[in-house]
Amino acid sequence: MPTKPTTQLKKSERTRRLIVEKAAPLFNKQGYWGTSLQDIIEATGLTKGSIYGNFSGKDELAVAVFKHNSHYILRKVKSITQSDNNASRKLFMITDFYRQYIYSPELSGGCPILNTATEADDSHPDLKDLALEALDYVRRSFIHILNNGIRSGEFNPEIEVEQTATLFLGLIEGGILQTKLYNKSKYLLDCLNHIDQTVKEMCMQK
Image (cartoon, rainbow, N blue to C red; front, side, top):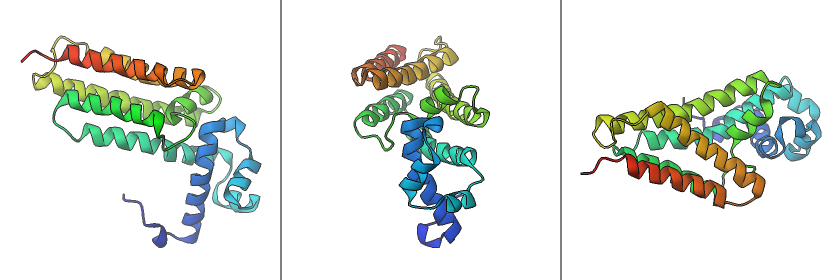
């Protein structure tokens, strides 16, 4: 369902959106445990009563924030998957998206899926399930593109589709993690370049 224009939202909906949008970068940079109610109050300019009047607690807000943060990445992957008919171009578009994400991220703090999956683990099952669902969506998108490439005769039919999709996803998330820890874009760029090279090698010679 399309999102209503802000002018058409009820006051309560506008307030909930404000809280989510202001809390989103805090959770992505500081994590669930590192973000306090006082941080949210200062970021939103609202009172404790207003925040808890719109969300039952920090858990509900964290779930709403993760959905907001992960939507940007999942929406982009979906648009790429549904765009060009050429499978290799789709894969190159995905790696290009992550290259651009290094230099002009819409969300500060890195990949929200990786951040949440790492922090939540067994401490917050709802967030862990949402992170798993988002990660699996990206993986299934790779599988879909690879299968289409094989069916069209673009890719070598002998490639292991699920294994390759897992490898691509691992390279991206692992590259993001290393780039974040070392504060050097080189690590993610090396991983993305390796994916591009693998895609080229999978293509059948015309």
